[in-house]
Length: 119
Image 1: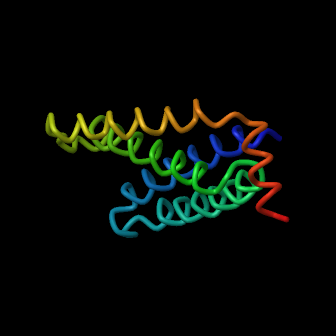
Image 2: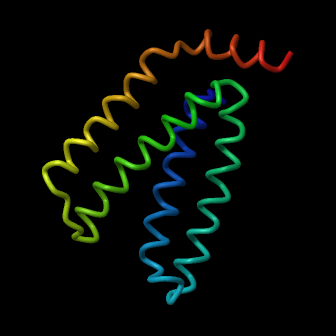
Image 3: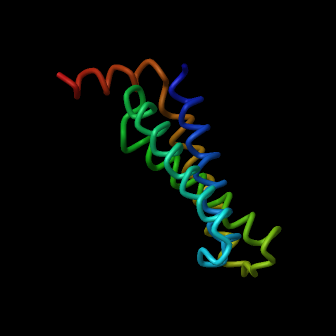
């Protein structure tokens, strides 16, 4: 499977895991807590496969950047957490930087970098 698809799936699992962790209310709702742990486990499994074709620094930066932005939006929309104008601006900068990393990392070049690092 395409490494970028694996990375996208890892991001979705991370976002789901974090949202479920919040919904667990500090594990007071154990089913949400267990579902959160399952999502995190799947997330890291997928991320490990993405690392085989995308340089680790790039994949991790995209994974964490998209996750931060998505969780901030979910926190605002679903959990009614406030976001100041300054915070929204910095979240946008994170999104811009993450998008820039993706757009400037050609898939073929990423495979070459990983292959050369592996020896």
